[in-house]
Length: 306
Image (tube, rainbow, N blue to C red; front, side):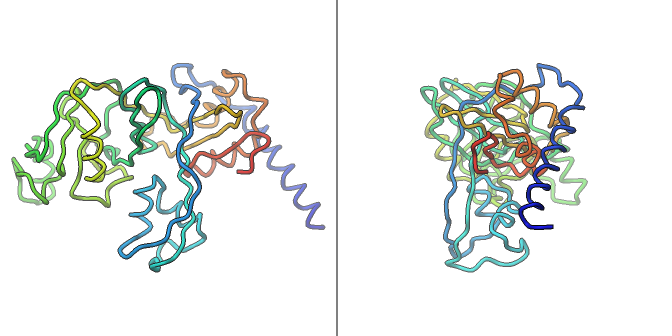
């Protein structure tokens, strides 16, 4: 079989599989569907490796999983990076909600978006709670803001320390060993805050005990942009669909780490139909994005390239 015939047959099979998949999906309750977004942040760019860089540290700074970063560049995730090496980055992300002012945190994305005057002015990679200790969702207000905080260790974490055979601490003073870093932004959720960390490698992973961790310099930057009474929302949206002003349509899909919204394909189909854009989507591209779940916003309209 010629290469052209093989390519045509492969594309036909992918499209046919897409129609079969989307034709037999269970319905998702309307309340479980996210809003159609109008914004995409980030870009495709290049990065030159610096001393001390790893796939994990570069990915955490740029909102890309290290395994995805390795795959994007065709390199082994086990091989050390070379100083001066050029990496291809793609950190395009769908903005999960619109606000006039305030904070939006989407847990599956592991991203915090800061809005001012209806626009995203800052975006930070975060570490939410691990699956056994999930971060709560809902609206909140900023109720405390502390520099050089003392960590008063919650009883639940003291129990965890004891079970792990560690020295049980009740307080940790300010300094380089403080898990809260240099800044604490307390939220109206019980015992939940946004803060820096002394464990930067945990960022862009699900490793906290429910709080939202940032790189310490990012936490300091965010701290300087907030005031007491500022509000926000924490959401759980592993599927994000956007139609931007020029008509481009993007789909971003993440792993359902907390096991809250597993029916991903159905959500995409219903969200597109509800917003009247189903016939503008290349569904074979959508199937590929759903299958990969790589956390990058991919263009899935009929005239996009990726």
